[in-house]
Length: 488
Image 1 (cartoon, one colour):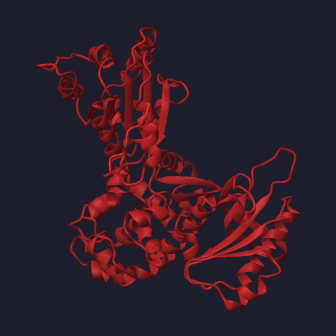
Image 2 (cartoon, rainbow, N blue to C red; image 1 turned 180 degrees about the vertical axis):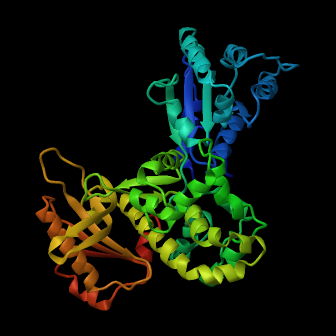
Image 3 (cartoon, rainbow, N blue to C red; image 1 turned 120 degrees about the vertical axis):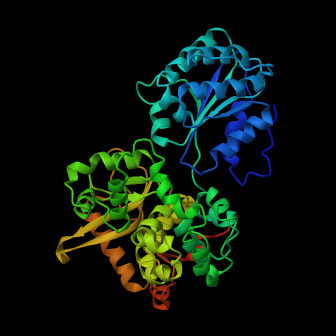
């Protein structure tokens, strides 16, 4: 059968809509469970509410409430869905779920439960009750479609893991992620790549943030500073307090002060476990739990060093948090009292060094992940950063964008590309020399570097001498134009 047309009000999200529409086109005689997760503000509710509306399904948005109140609200929504004159009175979720399965199999559309973690937090038995009813529905050829959604990424992840009741029951697991950087620029109607990078370093690819500032996009590079003052540094916009809420909304976060200190450490460039511990004055062993919680919530990512076994660095996954930690948190009182212009003036060099520089490197890594095979002469299997020790010169060479081919057992690992990224620096011959040296050292460590492409990524352009000297070697120069090349 033909799949539902995506409503025009949903920007992009074609892949996600396809998956949801296919899920909603039920096959008779088989119950199906779907799980949709993703961090807050990515537009999950927008998608699944549209799905319920288009298919005549049921949408129930859970809130933080007692079990009794939740049951009462659920009964009201259910009554509307099955067109019952009075809502049923449920004493327990056991009753409610049994009733739901009895009536929903013959109704159109899926039953969507949004913010499911709120319900399971107040009623821990709920996942087991659902599992029991799904298994019974298989035996009774009941073709109910149940879609559970939630933002507490850690809770949603655990729901289908190892020994969890619903493990192996889901036929759809969809993660709704932020827009990637080229799509984010289109979404905000920004055509100038130099402006797009700065803008993305503040709000990233989270679609809801556009609504938080009443669709106010910076008009030009000259308008950027004013845009920052009008939006993220303006106490009257919801975006102003958002970075603080992102932490407070996570169920597992107790002592928020310590978590903020951990994020501040990472935003300030201390991105190893020891570095973070040193910055906040704790022992490395004492912050393991906090790092795990932040990783679980999707606010921190741990990335392996591609050239040193067992070494890894932490990066903040949400640009807005980096901006908040570097620019806003140290001057919070002044910002709240409306002194944004003075704070921004003072913070601009920090913004450039601690926010824009690292963010540009991240954009370059994302470019490499999505690069077609002809750019590096193969399909990237792993993209990351890495450090190559240079004992002869007693230094270390940091490689910002390392691209590795898939590992083949028994063969040396192929390095497709070694790249350096500089946001504010015109790149020249010496940058290529460092990459050549790194390539030579990696060959000595047993990597296959015969076809390694050296890549310079710059936000400020390239030295004409570099252009002249690269004919002999395979050196790519990737500027803002290439990073934001319009999709053919």
